Length: 582
Image 1 (cartoon, one colour):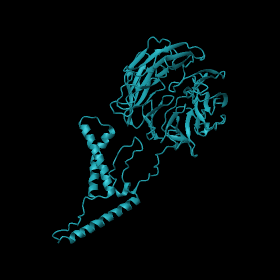
Image 2 (tube, helix red, strand yellow):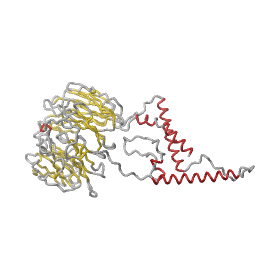
Image 3 (cartoon, rainbow, N blue to C red):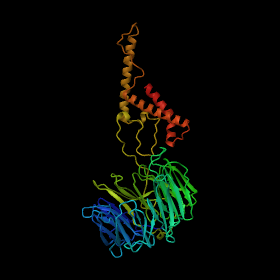
Image 4 (cartoon, rainbow, N blue to C red):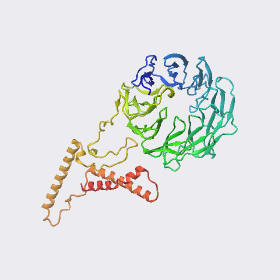
């Protein structure tokens, strides 16, 4: 088993305080690397083998060799804010927003490619769109492709300043991808729906552009994301529309398609309707996992025939993370969910453990496949920034919190290392030595609630995975705080005093034949103002339930949360009766 002694991982940490590298799972400063204390560190990127690190620091692009920490290149950054390396570390591409000026009314090169062997500029282009700015090399760097207005240019991978080798002419290309295979290299491109014509995706074997090896046409697709498996023979296409014409989903309509080099094009059948939150290939390239459906979402593992292998049930999750070895699968619920994480063993498809990393915005496995980092970063969240190192068993090894005023954490990234360097490990559910076992989350200080609302259930949902419930013990004095109970006793005493006074007045007037027209008889149905407000809220919820029952009788299929709300009808009616009698 790979241990911290045999492998010292490096974690890059970028924020308003600059850029630094942390070594080991206890996160000690990595001394060979000179910390960059500039507050203008815009981005960072590693090569696929982790031998180089590049980032933008103010007006310079810096390239450092790892693990030596030696600065080997500095390039002018200009307005660049994005970086990417070529697969074999020969080139570094930098992109920034397209700009014009009085001196250059036609604009200047906003996509610049640097040769890392010579340190010279290899080529420069004008590319306005950020969505497809990256030059895409084959993994052997034999060719390099660029998306242009009327098609795809194919350049020689080592001579980017020369003429293109060939051009694939196709208008309106929205997405383009190159497979991680070399013999042959495969291209995939997507054209959206236009003027009533269907959208389509086509797969080609380079350099044969005359006939696609596989293609699929469909109408409901404004945007797609494409993902190749490890061998580059199969492609997953996640298609979505910006709006749902049926009105049943806020996220628009979504669908998943599978394409292969053998000509297969399959619409992946999902067992539950609703959004598709995440689609990920297993590192072995022979299966993929999908999280989908209205909350609580389903998670299902499929093979290359798109047949379900295993269903992980329903829970509040929206993301999938395979460890680099493909032996552990993490299903997590981040963003507007509570941060719960489930860890499953791929070998026996059994749950290893389940715990929570609240307010997390980022997750990444360490290269050894046993540890991972979660982080809370800006601008997604500007409060509570920090990162934490975990073991898959649920143990915490290190935590860094950003506590200085106005300081923010922007990004954390592991230095890539090939997982082949790590021997297989046996999955264990026992805590590891030198770690802190994750306990159940402690209750946070209660939010202030006015006296009239204390002792009653909250009507506000802080997370999407909280369901609307009405506690039957909401009126139980034991559930109230001391101050709320004291106020309730005062109110009850005041009501009893008024009732006694009214009873005495009624008794003294029993011998009067004609009561005075100015005498007001106390009403038994009069309610205190706060009880009247509660009664109106409960009656409103009861009307909503009546509407749901009518829709159910008409044959409409209700969501799970709507069915749960129907079960609350008896409790609502009981609450209403109690308020009327109080």
